[in-house]
Image 1 (cartoon, helix red, strand yellow):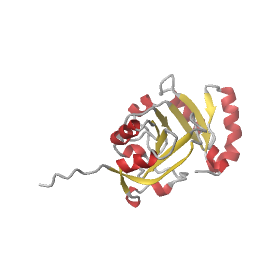
Image 2: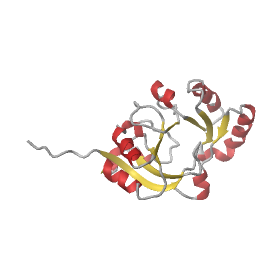
Image 3: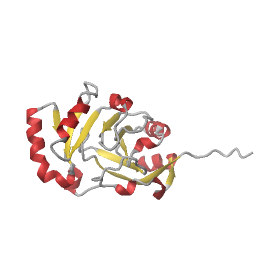
Image 4: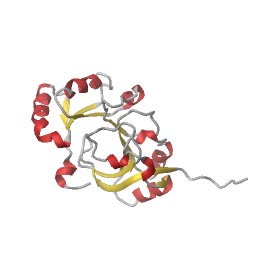
Length: 205
């Protein structure tokens, strides 16, 4: 009988050290871990290469965390794809052991796993988030593609906790067209904040 332990792995599309460009933690040094696999399929997604998990190498969770720990920042952002397609319990446990804050960006469409300091819920119309993720969200970040999306954003604002931070973010390719409407909307509804993809303006990852 083979008693050799099997190392837990995850499909990693890319991992890199940068600044968080969006939402509540914008501007902070962050180590991003982008996992492969997504079953939501947003047509405006800018990382469609992440959708097929089989295209990305399976890396041991130990090696993923060891690489992250080489950098001085201690905020790890787990994103995708859709990270909750994977069991993230061990990954977050090891990151915490190395002194990291664990942040996640998710559509919320798969069951919650892992221990999180911050969950950014970005719901998508193509596959609705689960109630358990909505309840756990610290940040609601809604991508605005057209003016109908404001009403849709409000539907989720009514479901998250009262302490959840609310952000509206223009879809990048429609930013010039939709941003003025977002500014006007936030002026009229000041519970919302603007999220801008600053990393794209700075030309960083």
